[in-house]
Image 1 (spheres, rainbow, N blue to C red):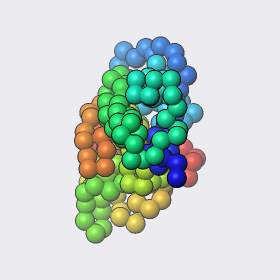
Image 2: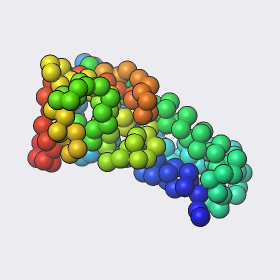
Image 3: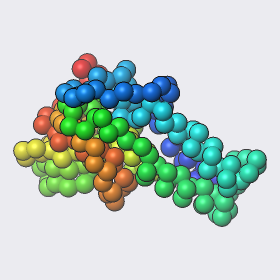
Image 4: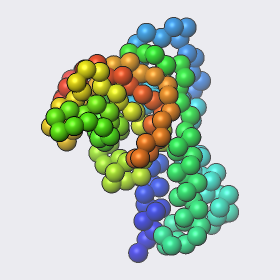
Length: 193
């Protein structure tokens, strides 16, 4: 059996990678000018997760390929742990602090009751943080809903959250979130924003 850990690392590396170009923060951001994929907006333009993976892999394996290792191989475990650490410390866009944002995604519940969720993670693809390892922290947003929260029956579908983004890294039981979104409104995601 091929290494499951390495397959999961490949999935982790599928996070959006915007083209490398210097970013200049606006003097006083009021609303995020979202890219075609709003999740790309949360990633610093000069950060390349593939280059980070390659550097960590080369340090552990030298010029050998990690693709031939089993999950139980100590080097595979070391690579997986090193990538998890790198993802938990992925760079954030400080210039986005306190900006308005509408973000679509999938819910990973954290806190609420049988009717409403008050806190949850929002992630860019289904299964992140539960069925797969968490994405880099710049692709995980902790949502704190204002008011009574999001209806529980919405958590199984793609949603769109509107609110104010804060650059504030938080560790949760499902992974590290790089941002906190103070959610004002939630609606089903239709792709027509």
